[in-house]
Length: 422
Image 1 (cartoon, helix red, strand yellow):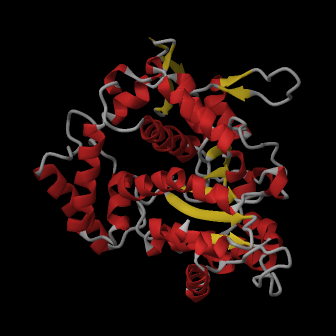
Image 2: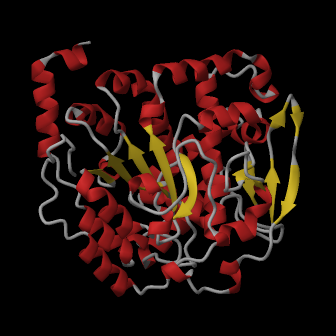
């Protein structure tokens, strides 16, 4: 294959990686421990940003794409959503409007809400096992933590996944005539779960800044044990997710931590970074083995880090979310008893919506809708703005701890096993 076969191409990609500014995990963690990261978010806007938000909503409403809150109820889109589009375009109102309009047209054209409501539960779960998975935990700011272990996406598992798309009964009635490939329809549903279940749930849980809704996710991407051929075979699979997120789910990424990078990763990085804009690539950290635990623990409590990365969380790739006690109080009704031989509860398969005072269970089983509602107890975050015990540290204390944990003493050089540091 020409992309990999030319020596000059490989040298070029290596040079490109080396010439890129190094993303500094120490500085990034210090920023996350303070309040700088909140700039441009709801309740942390400058006067000019407040003005731009009003202009954006007015422009969208004049064109029929937004409905303001009135006597009839809530606005068609909350301010946190509108701000994602503004931040993505650096508060350029016309640029944000263009992307917002394209996204709303795309959602209508592909009947995204209907897709999420009617998708076959087993088809949804098959897709869940092929993309980043929520661990059920959050970082110190309350942002959900996802894990993506690439090595499991081998040719055998990919072939098995592709074979599930040939069954017409697995396609929602509303999408049987869709020209969009099945793999992308399923991917749309996964993003809807992030937007309409995980983020709203996390926004109801205690955290240092409860006045600001959770609108993003952290991703641990484990590429250990993945060969160059497997990377190449997965290129389209991963690119679909990246392009989709950039176009229609802007500003939903907080950080990506790449773990276990092989010696040839500079070559792979040369084409991966083309899927993202510069702002997004600045959020990607390629960690050496020595940096993994110090970096992750600067963002996350050890109880939220999976054991395989040095933490205490009993969670492995393929597992359903392992909720913390606070989340369990709200949506524990979605858990199911542990499987035989297991000690932790399982979690309901398929699409769900978090609606504040209740959860809607969606999807179809054998062609029949299973839609029903499960009540949610009063949110701890609504009762108190006090962070959870592990999140009660002051910004200054967190920053000091970050600097101490990330004193890596030169660990940002290439390691002996070929890991590439950020």
